[in-house]
Image (cartoon, rainbow, N blue to C red; front, side):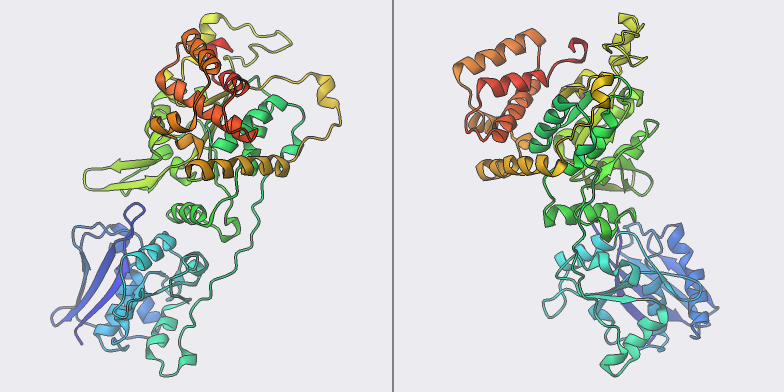
Length: 508
């Protein structure tokens, strides 16, 4: 047989479109050509494949070898095509049977010795196999991939995963006449990993900040912590994921699929909410994603988790502005001249900042010497439109030394999470979504106010010159506070507390 056809997968954002690997052997001067818009990693595969075949004691054909990766207009990157190319050469030269190749899809990078190395995006590829393409018998094709990716790929329950350690093992699978010599299907592991988070019982004092975080967690609201250095802003933020509602299976799969695109997923962290904390020198591309071949950024890697931006004013203002659209939409679209990709970005923003350049404005020791103009310039580094999209602004005050030295026991994350999950369930039963996702019409339906309560909110709007967006966000926060209190009606006390979380920076 001079022609062999196999199936594999490319990566295009969160999608994994099918790639047909066609290998043709022809007479003429020996050569090895790969066509179909391959990038550098794919072009280099011919050297890896040649060495792997020779070290596995196969004959490398002294013919003109042409490998076509179809469709031609789809860019191909990474070493995942090494395995299907090598198998195609062996099938086309008659060294392995080819009659069963169409029942499988293949992905894997080859070492020079013929061992299989893990690849990126195994979970996304497995999703695509089960979702888009069905075999002739109505079931998805089986997927042969490196053993290191097997646990990750098996999270898709419908998938048939065949893990392999080497090229020889894959070839033996197709050449074997008895079932015992074939690769055994991978059994889906029972994932019982318990998420591990730092606990709130380690935080002394700061009862107001803890209460605000409880509200933020119950409604998935974004929050900004403002306070002097050493007051526990970062400590509180690091413990915030531990009070969020537990992840559902669907949320965990979506989060794992994004992390899989960067080889950042570990089965040990199954159902653990991501916590991403990029340094303030991060670029806009690092934050939202991009590159020649679009890859997910920090906001996508924090999907269904927390994006923590410490020292918020130290970020470049143009970098912060790129957060405005995904905060509203929950996804990010990246467009390049020849490539477009879309990544999910349903993250919860938690940010922290000092109130002034020296950090001690409002501190009880009174050692701040910043001028009002310097304070305004520092706080003005955060634009009004971005600040308008942050639901809650939380003051974190410095603790007196006497309170800090007390050996008092704080409430644990487990107890706070229990109340948060109860409020979360009330939201889902009432409106089938969390309060932060309510639209304008849904706010009118689920957040009605009594006349006295509405007057209180209108007075706050006039005093602080709030926008319509700010008005709606205060209502959403008030709805969450009412849910925590198990109150069907939003009362005046709930709105008053929500207003306190919406004070502008220069008024705190």
